[in-house]
Amino acid sequence: MHRRQRYSFSAFSSLRQTPLPQKDSQRGRQFFFEFAYIHH
Image (cartoon, rainbow, N blue to C red):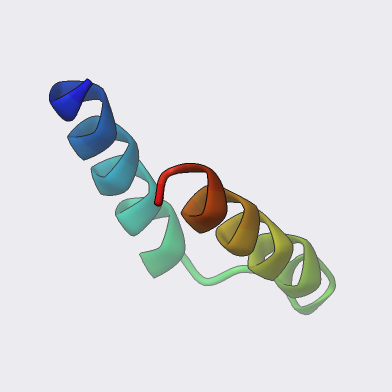
């Protein structure tokens, strides 16, 4: 479980560093909230 969480966090971190298009920014923000809520 720990290992999976760390992997997900690292993958999400790298994904977050990548600049997203303006139209995808909203979807990315929603994904961030869902991800944080599920993995909190």
